[in-house]
Image (tube, rainbow, N blue to C red):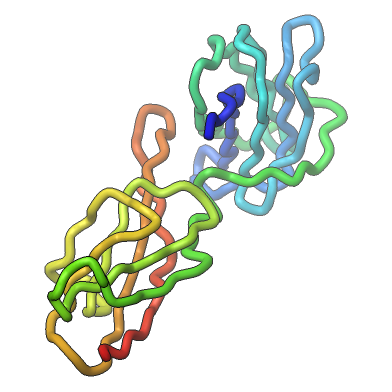
Length: 207
């Protein structure tokens, strides 16, 4: 199927400059010099995050403010790809203000990566009884998957994510417990963050 290219999103993480802790309820305005909230005015969630979607590719003005902190303004280049920005506010007052922000239900790319469904079955393609296929469904995108029969994943390696991945059991027959985890990377201010899913446990009884 053809996937329509959606316009990029911009995600803002707001934190206290001194402590580094996330600031919930910070007002974030995205717009132009003429209208600072043209593309939205929202409050950050409990993790200090908000996200704007389907943005036009033109220069924008970002204003972030919160009572008890010095407001900040940034001029943004046109977005041609998804971007995550970290804004650090200094305690104090004054500075630019973002007016009229309301709480927005935004999902962060840094959240919500989990394995929502998983199963394991014998790989019928070959005659190796130790080969199984691990099937997963995710709540978000992932780039890599790791499968192991050890809870600490000792000796396991990341491999490119696919919805169905072959795995070779350590021994034929008997009962097996598999541990599965997925990950992806997002860029934050030029740094790359690794987003890991919680580990999913699977049980397999070899026939």
